[in-house]
Length: 553
Image (tube, rainbow, N blue to C red; front, side, top):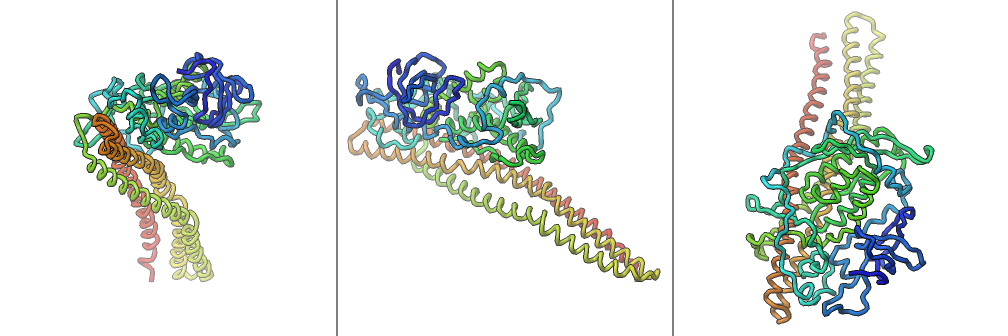
């Protein structure tokens, strides 16, 4: 337990808000605690420059005076980062000066009072909400049994402390037990049709992102876009900016990405960010992203996600929730400690490895296929809007030139042919215009869906890699047991942890597979139907112009 006067090392960088009396610190900086009782996951401390301010307690680790405290192994800052996972808050946006990152005036946007619209119409999305799994039990918040903790804080009194380089290895080795997660909700796994699944809540909800509005402050010197977010279970709307979504992504990634896919947000853009087409496209992408997150039973019920959706009463309520999320220690390997193991469904090591190999091959093949499809689709959509449009228009112009030449012959027997050829030329120009507009109806929506899944699948190499690291750590512990360096109980605990990790990863893959079937069915149904309508319209136009020649001599 940290106390006043302790010296701590920063595990992560922290970009503090000066007007909130917060320090800005880099990873590896040392701070002396001046007030350890601030509460809500915060310390007050003095940095190397003598500046005093607040910083998240979860971002720092007390530097011990010796390697042992009270007879147990002390956790070094490096080990603590292993336990929590390498998910330090991203600093990628530190230099961004676009509409969403030029200031840190959070409360100006978060303090807006919520409004309840009379009716909110959900924008079109490829996510099939009706496919949401139902359960007769709510998302579990009860304590679940966890693998037994070693009396010395981790397996063998820290035997693996210097060898656990990933969150999953730290979890399997028992080192994550040193992070206190006793007050955190348990993550519940179920076995459905022989497959491990996350437990789904019967209180399912989704969200609508709507009504983007341009706002400004500082007498119009600073502009930004706000979006209304309305969860359908309450109908109460809150207002958020892009940077708030980005903050949520950062926190979800830090907390869950060891075992759960947290896809990226749409890319930032500096130029053209206030154009109507860009604003609407971003709204649709943010809507799809937040709807996707609300479908995940673990993410949707998390405190940070609920805080993002529902915090609106006061500036203090938002700040308290924000600080609580940023100081959460149940992240990475420590998050795995909150998973209730399926002790009644044991899995052999060979079966876990076989399933891992199958999932790795599937996600790799899908990733490759999605990359090919999005590259080809983008190229074809470009051709539709450019070369194909011009080719049909050029064909129509050529027919028009022939008709203009024929128009000099004013004989009655020639006029019908001239008119028919002129009609054909106009028809081909219209077909060219149809190609120019058609990709908005078929290829672009298809590519939006494919790109969303590219983001989802891109997270799985890390997730599956953690699964493999956990299995490898289990093998290492079994080997140490054969060498007489650990007990059978240690091996049993490591095995149960590795099984829990494997089942959690399999549950995440199965969650993706469940929605993939419904999503891709809708993607392909919409695409092929639009293609049918498009080419039927072309056929109808060609049949109309062809009929003009039937009775000509």
